[in-house]
Image 1 (cartoon, one colour):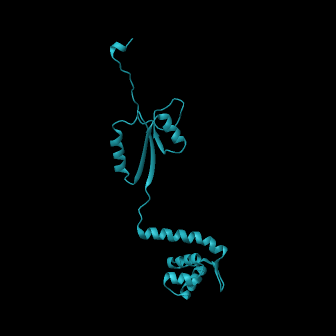
Image 2 (image 1 turned 120 degrees about the vertical axis):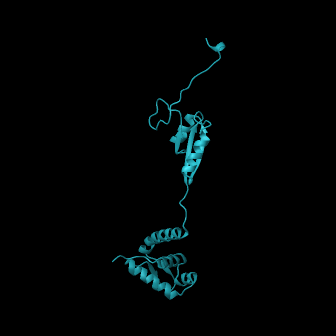
Image 3 (image 1 turned 60 degrees about the vertical axis):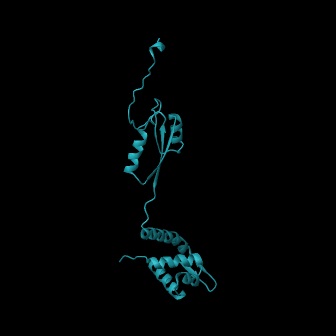
Length: 173
C-alpha cells in the first residue's frame, strides 16, 4: 500500500512550525485547534515519526520535524507553482562576439534565434576577440564567437573568412 501526503495537512504542519502553536495555526486557517491537532497526529502516523513536542506553553519541532520541514516547504512550493500554472523561468544566454564577426548579418541572425527560442533572454557583448575570450574564461560569458587563435584549442569552427588587403596602385611597391 502506498502512502500519500495530504496537502492541507502538510500546510497545517508548516503553520504550526512557523507560528509555534496550534491555536495560532488554527486561527490562520480558519479552523479549530482540535482540527489542527488531529491533522498533525495523522501526519505523524503516516510518516511514522513524531514531528512536534507539545507542552502547555510551547510547541517545538523534534529533530524529525525539523528535517521534514525542508521537504514540506518544497512540497508546498511545487504544489503552489503547479496550481498557478507558472511558466518556466526564462533562460539567460550571455554571448560575446568579436567586433570582426559583428557585421550586418548579426541582427537578422539574432532575430532568427529569438524566433526559435522566444523564452531565451539573450545578452550580447561585442568587443575584441581577446577580451571576449578572457570574459568567457572568467565565466562572464556563456559562449563566444571570436577569431581563432593558433595557440588555443577547443570550440567549433563556424565559418572561414577570406581576408584581403586592398590598396590603390600608387601605394603598391
